[in-house]
Image (cartoon, rainbow, N blue to C red):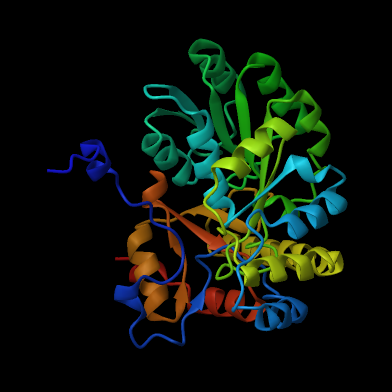
Length: 356
């Protein structure tokens, strides 16, 4: 009888945004503010590139052309770039490369659940260092303490963080790097384009930094699955060596090349998202709520009876993210989506007597 690792059967699925299959039937009218995508949608040039991609030939096994374009765009060498089937694959590859059985791995939370799941699959134990309500300010010193105490091979943080929107400045990240020079600090920057924050590429000189970036969010192409990682040549090469062959498809490579040729679209998307985020925040405050300040393209807001509010909004044609899977059952996460979706959300927001 084949014996697999029995502990893997206890792994919980990590919920993500978008309409569940059980809720989607007959709901083509729903406006989705549960997935944090650019309010502009995908660029026309990216759509055309995907349609023109060759499907009758294997893609480059290591996405060499895309990696070279990324390197040129951000100012590193192609050897410092690894491509992935979305940022999520790169998170899993980092855990596979660094986590040894039994290793305790700090994760700055509450945050994206795939960090912890990847650590568990690799045989490690996630150690969550949580920011606390009501402001969820990142607990930098507590994270430093965990790094110094555990001396982990790897640690994870999301910057800006999902779902809180909190942004760690470069000085705080340098504090973490000084505290753990032998730890690979993985910084998930999926939402960085929306923040307007300075680029952290200069931190690659430290040698123990891995920056993970996604084209899914700012170019609104979640169906394509494309991301990239920036690191030292040794780390980036390791990720490429352990990645499955052809994990980045030909349509994804084509989409990435087209996206990188159009930086103005990214700038427009980020600017539009910031405007819609502020309009959404003002509308929520007018309804007596207190959304957290956010550097990303979404807001986290405490809501009385959050599951009921989500259910009511869905019935009225708007989907938002229930944050119970982040350990925040009294909160909703709402994307700064297209103006028409924000308009509908604010128009159909339930009165207090409907929150049941």
